[in-house]
Length: 329
Image 1: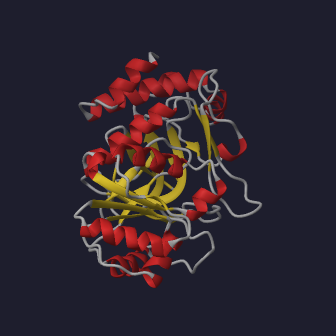
Image 2: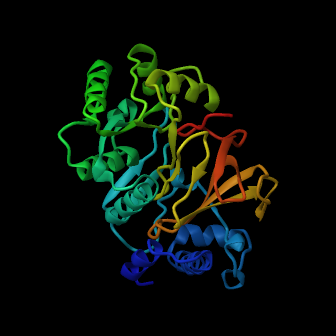
Image 3: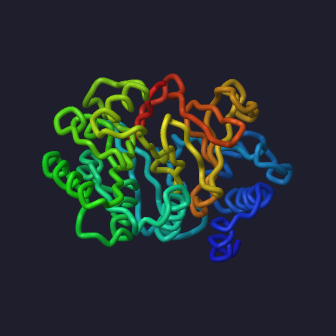
């Protein structure tokens, strides 16, 4: 496949049929050039030549990223992202061949839902991610900060009081605010340094990491809305193993960019798919994962609605918990 032409095509999709056509071409390319994925498909007894629709494509379990180097072709990676986890837990590694493709994906996706990033001042409260390094989330926010071109904003490790003062000053100046925050740190701030910034966009990125009692999404968002004086809490659905994210403007309802698709598999038959509104396993097609694997079974539970939006309902039983933990509803 011509990678340059491919990059242009996925960010300029015109129809669902074009998405399906590219997905099928990408499946054949990754089957032929990704040994781990080919072995997985063959082990399932699926014939590559008889796959005519995305629903027939086998989805690689996300756990493979913990035990194998998942890469398509013979390339040297530019960066390696690593998932978070508690001490002793095996972590996932994503070997990213083209960091620019990742940057294009998150930039175009975020701007699709929130407009030009240069209009915002961006703050980040991501202490656990900053402490461990190799975080795809930190990488994303670092690049977003460069696009905002403002003297205000940036990363705040543990100085919640300084963050509160800057947020209030940005509010006073009438600036458009985005705050990315790991869940436990946002709760700490909402409880100890509450502030009224009703026009701000607050993104909770998940991650209690055993630091606080787990809350339902409704309980969490209620506390954060009260602490920051906002009507809705926004969210990101992404993971180390992907190069694209879905975004929620509130109530835990997510929407994908055009080059990403959610499919809900029957938990008793992973090769069968459920109708809209039914709960099952979340499978993701991420066309941006050109050099890795674009077809991933996540071990998350969710359901898709008629308009293509979706919600995440929890985890499969006996699945270990990712650093970006999911909140039960």
